[in-house]
Amino acid sequence: MESSGQLPADDQSSESARGEDYGTLKYQLLGPSLTKAGQDAVDQQKVSEIIYNASKGSKFFNHEQERDRNLTVKIERILKEKARLERLDLSPDVRRTDEYLAELELSRDLSQHVIHVDCDAFFAAVEELDRPELKTVPMAVGKGVLTTCNYLARKFGVRSGMASFVAKKLCPQLVLLPQNYEKYTSKAKEIRAILAQYDPLFESASIDEAYLNITSFCEENHVDPDEAVQRMREQILENTKVSVSAGIAANAKLAKIASNKNKPNGQFRVPSERDTIMMFMRELPVRNVNGVGRVFERELDSIGVKVCGDIYPQRGLLAKLFGEKAFQFLAQCYLGLGRTKIEPVENYERKSVGTEATFHEIGDKEELRAKLRWAAEELEKDLARTQFKGRTLVLKVKLHTFEVLTRQTAPPRAVFQAKDLYAFALPMLVKLEKDIPGMKLRLLGLRCTNLVSTKKVDINFFGLAAQTKPSTGSTVDEKAECEIGTEEAFETAARQEVQDEMNDLEQLSQEAAGGPDTSEPEITSSTGPNSSHLEQWECPICARLQDADDRAFNDHVDFCLSRQTIREAVQGASQDVPSIPPTQKRKTPSHPSGSGTDPRQKRLFFR
DNA sequence: GCGGATCAC
DNA sequence: TATGGTGATCCGC
Image 1 (tube, rainbow, N blue to C red):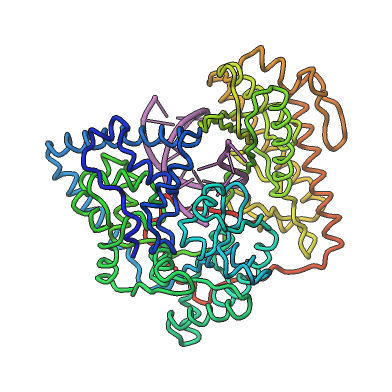
Image 2 (spheres, rainbow, N blue to C red):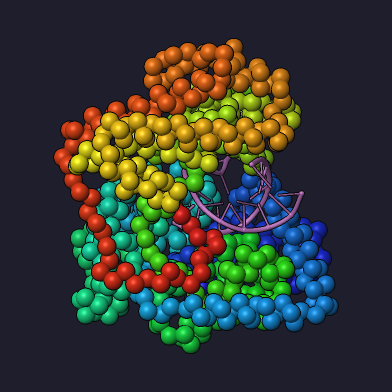
């Protein structure tokens, strides 16, 4: 089905070692979505020539070339290591992997009906709803880089992720539309309302993809999964005018693969029988599995693993060549195992919040500071929206050569204000400027990790306070908190907040004492929070100015903040209509917690 | 823990 | 002329 997605034949590796084999580079330049639907009838040879010629000589091209060379070297190392291992006795490794496979086999669960739903060329489809005349012409959404294109455009070799000027070379009549994210979000909402009828606990994987567990739905309505999905797809098409494709299988991994089989506007089911699944996987190109990208594909290809069936003969080598996690991942691919637990994204704990932007090459220091200020302000907004502070701040830059660098720092306390974000990021930027003479950037970004929730205390119908932090499992016993009055809850929560922060500070100061200082002292003192470039810190709540004692001031701010958030929550709650949160439950919560998790499982957060 | 790299969409 | 933004995870050090 995906015969077009062939790696270039690698006849002589000595040639590619010197970087003279452009086959792999051209393949690389084709972009990551080569295996996507709609490419079957395309002359990939011709397309890759056009892309190659359009890119040749650019900084982007040079960077890709460099990466390609590095990968080729890495693969040679892998092959050398493989040859060395093969001279040894691998039988203990083979035995160990067989034990692992047997263990995995025991966890196989074929009782669930998991489906993956994927909107066809979503952004393009939504645009076509507003302007039907676009249906008959090749069209793409996105400015510098395409995010989506319709199937007519794909006939020309145009793909998502492609630079628009390259797409124009492939298809001069291509119509380009700017993104209208709100439009897509609102359409996605319509679709999700329908999905919820089939599984109220469905999992949004992205704006246009979702996983559902329709086991209960099928039981209750006495329909088989094919029929249920057929009905659901018709309902979506009728009500929202968007066509979707779907995969039906015993687990999420298989369902995801299956949803690509009959795209667009189709569905495919992998029967829930062990032998059928094994046969299905045996012929499946590893690249079609979520988590195997262009790099891993080439690495696997180099040791003769093209389809999942090829994993088995190599099982004794995989852990040593690619690491334990990769081995476990491949073992599950071979067996066709995946998770059966589907849950709302809200259940997932966010790990980071960040922002970044690309711009014309900038070397000017003042201009770069302006970009950094912009990033700090954007990040402040995003942190406010998501209600987090960050204990770690990460600066990301992309040099004019397309090389990406990151630097991180742990401020003395969790940060969330633009002023602080800027103040702590600046020394990192300054150090980079010092280390890289004549540094020119084309991208700059900031990200917070090690998040601390700043979610307001939720005063429910009974006037009782309870933390609404996501279920990290680390929060206090909420039942206990519900037995106390508002005033007391106020004090308790405030104390808890301060205590949390003090624990954090304690930990941070201990770590700081042991670890090396990452920033240059003179830079820190000239550009840090106490810098003369910036105002003195003040408490954002009561505007008290920072005094000599850092620690005491920090504690004061945290206490002030926690009081404030509770106060706001109390005021807000008195105006709101009291409501008991609907208890969403599947009728049969019979999800044995799946067989193994995908190590490269994506966790995307929309809204 | 840090920084680079890979991956998904 | 010109190649994105957000978030997650893994590995080597």
